[in-house]
Image 1 (cartoon, rainbow, N blue to C red):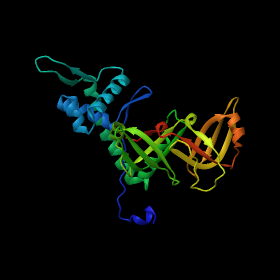
Image 2 (image 1 turned 30 degrees about the horizontal axis):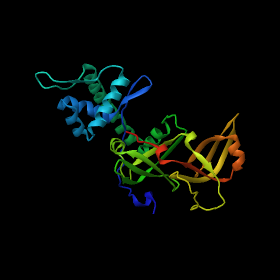
Image 3 (image 1 turned 180 degrees about the vertical axis):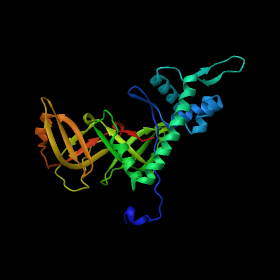
Image 4 (image 1 turned 90 degrees about the vertical axis):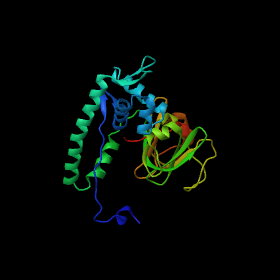
Length: 280
């Protein structure tokens, strides 16, 4: 049964979106970080603010350090000792950012309401536009749905289901799971550098074939392109009609493996090499 057959003509389509503040070419923060700043202003403490927005104490401080660094000026000031026993306050610049963000957010919501009412299917298209506009230094950007979260003593194992049915496994810290808001059924993307991907061929054919190596991720597909350079080659592997994984390997490896367009191969990489991200 498809998603379309499960929905009814009376289902309301709601358009959503987020506002991010930028400092030059880098992102300063979005709804979550602005909410943290507002909570600090209300509670006067990092502990109280972190609890109010559902962050760990360390995650809150990491976010504050990031915002201070990217803003190029102090946004949060922590006082120690003194008559009042210390506390945490916001600078005038931080308070202005909160007011600016809230004003822009109100106008943004009005725009979303108008667009959602005027254009059929705009909500789904808008989310897709946001994903395809993402820029990172990682060559491989794989979108999927969180299929399973396995909690460990220190780290969590996150399984991300790709559109074609295969999956990517990542190992991240508990704090990363919480700060990203990762939940089963939620959307996320996996980033993997091309230099971290190994390519292999084997004699066993079929979707269940696997190679006995320590790499947790083994994605099977067909070579879609081979671009040779002076020393290294860029090899792209099509997992399905929508998903491609690219690896950087030596020209000698291309020759040894006999890689050519249309050949079945396996892209392998460690779970620790996968970086997970979400859209805020």
